[in-house]
Image 1 (cartoon, one colour):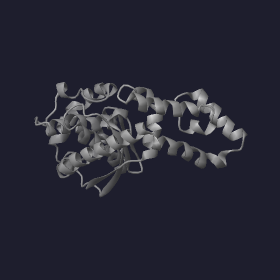
Image 2: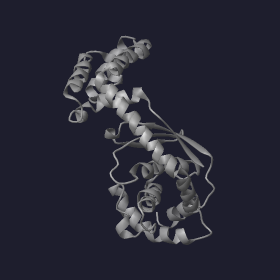
Image 3: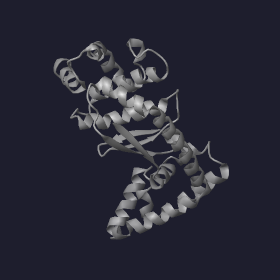
Length: 260
């Protein structure tokens, strides 16, 4: 069974805010934005700040060069933490943090309400017994548009709900990357296309009260670069769903051998 543990990392949240501040300008209070902008600008000549602010490569290079040549690596933890503590006290950050906490509660409720159904669906579609897997999900503000998984059972997630049940569909998508890795399925465009067929396309239809069967007109959700692959493997996928002698691992291996 797959379980998700949702949490917030305020250092990562502040890191995102610094690097995407310009994109937050329209949705932040003008005073809050100005205070954060002024604080960030006050560190422009501080080398350690460029371990946080990665927007400009030449500035990052300047910062790292100064840290190395001045032998100040020993100060990295203290200096960066001091900067973070000042960001944490800003009203703008506090509002983003509060909104992120509320967003976490919403996503957590959505997942808990559907957790059993998602696990059953995955076992049916993958045709395996799911491993007992606990995944930590670092929730960020939905404005930052993050969705990424890591091999150490970690997901970073935060996105506006572009359609009903968007959050649980894409959390399942990211969880599948981890499950596939556990099953020895290589992370490539073919496996990614399979994940989209399972989640972005089929699971979305199930949760939005449509028939789970997908056709050529219902696989356009997802990465545009994967649409060609999904179209090519769709006939094989529809046969796989009906088969009783294959699971997702053998099916992936068959695709690689026969098609790719």
